[in-house]
Each structure stands twice: as C-alpha cells, then as structure tokens.
Length: 245
Image (tube, rainbow, N blue to C red):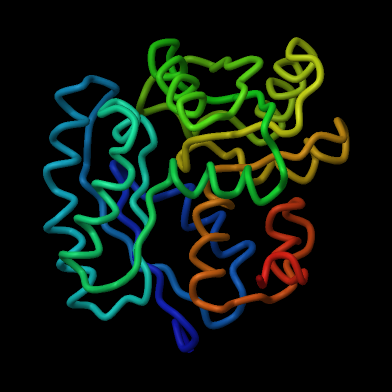
C-alpha cells in the first residue's frame, strides 16, 4: 500500500519527472513521494524569486496532506540568497507545515559530511554563474572545492543528458580535479543519481547525488534504515551502525 511507512513531501522548483523515477528505484517499500511544483521557467533570478514565493504556501498544503517530512528542492534558488538561507527556508517550511524539513543544499552538505568528504569536486548541469554560486556556498561552510564544472544545459533540457553522458562528464571533472574525497552532483532534474554507482566503481571516488542526499536525510529522520544496494555508498550507509547514530 502506498506510503504505509512514511510519506515524504517534495517541493520542486520545476516539473517532477526525473526525481520520482529515480526515487522509486531506491526507495524502501512503503515509502511514498508526495510532490508539488512551483513551475519556474528558466535560470533567471526573477524565476527563482517566483519559486521561492510559493514555498510557504506549498509547505502548508503538504502539511495539510499529513506528510511526515518535507524536502525543498532547487539548490540554485537557495544559494542565490547567500549563506544561511538554507536555515531560513527550512524554518519557514517547518512553521507552515508542522513537520520536519530540509532543503537540497543542506542535505547535500550533510551527505558529504556523513561520508567524511571535505575536499570535493562539483559536476553539475548548471551554467557557469550558478556553478560558481554553488561552489562559493559550499566553501562558506568549510568545504574545499577543488573544481566546479557544469555542462551548461538549457533549463528545459536538463533531463536530456543520459546517465552515461553524466558518467563521462564526471570522470572528466575528476581527472582535472586531482585528489578529492567526493564529487557532488547537484540538481534533481539531471539524471545523476542513476550514474552514481558507475562513477564510484570506475573512479573510486565517492559520489553524492542531490536526490540521494535529500532522501538519505529524510530516511534517517524518519527512522528508515533499510539496506539499499546498487545506488552508491551514501545510500548503502543508511543501514550501517554509523548511519543510525
């Protein structure tokens, strides 16, 4: 039965197509996804503000649907507001909904820390300006970003890059980056989560995908510690003693 263990709310800045597909590939049985979209149209700052203006209302609605946890997606929207905005938006969501929440940037950083990563590379679909903003945001929280590179995809074409293409691009980024503890793959509309296992097998470097990090945090908060194999080290650690602390 859908959501008999937990129902996780998700506020997306744009359409939800890749994220639900990837979620149900790794989600434990009985954990359901309840999504809403803010329908932003492109990479412009005006669109980011339009999306952020809808978050409180979306959170209140998800709360009325009795979800157990809420994730706010859309890293560029948060980092554009500067350091600390991830706490502001989480507080707004929790106040409006009455349930615990996270935002993708916070979940990503927590996932990287959980895997012991401090020196990282970023491989993304973002245009240069948003890639630089993500780099600066993570560095403001103490990460050392040795390389940040994006494929500069048009906003409505992000989903068109295949996992194999993302694997090849990420290997190029890591080769140029030199030694690092992990590679961070932001954006839930990019098919990066499907490439994580291959990236780790072929490079030996831990890969933290945005979608995996988001739901890893939700699962931990909800006490879900099922074994998840074949989707990379972060999700595999969910069932370990370390993840349950």
